[in-house]
Image 1 (cartoon, rainbow, N blue to C red):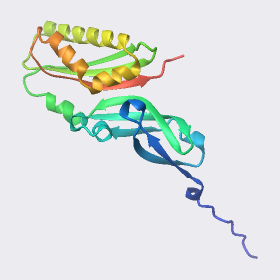
Image 2 (image 1 turned 45 degrees about the vertical axis):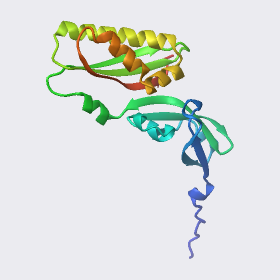
Image 3 (image 1 turned 30 degrees about the vertical axis):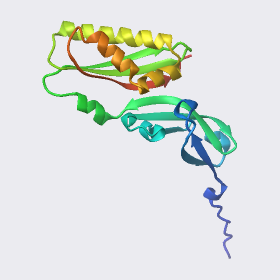
Image 4 (image 1 turned 90 degrees about the vertical axis):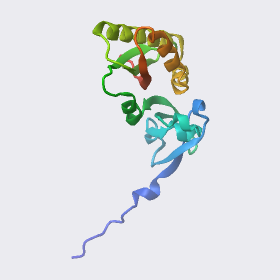
Length: 194
């Protein structure tokens, strides 16, 4: 008795290609492509891309940007900002011997009501006393909190990308102790709990 053979359908032939476009803040440039068999499966996909490659500015190569697909127009997937992260090798370069390293993590609400997770790294030139270390941390948290409360989520991304916040915070903290380096290592959008 002969066995019936089923026709094998190639799943890749059913899939369509979508081009991923960066948000308006990054210049609406195409940053990649993705494939899916249904439009609904493209929503929520996260893409990681180097900030220096998008903006063609070498000094911004130290950041990676995560964008999330939130809108489809034909075969174009428009994205929104999701996270901005400092590459680990740049953070390691700040830290050396005989210095204090402060890692600060904050969960704050932006002006437009978006929950934001911000990580900061501060490195002193020399070892400092615990009281000075606590004062530095308190000052940095206060400055970041004031900045986030005054700005929308996309404005926060912009100030971190342009290093405006780093210069401002170092100028406020340098009277407590000498600062070797300061960097915002992560800015991430957080979903609010219901």
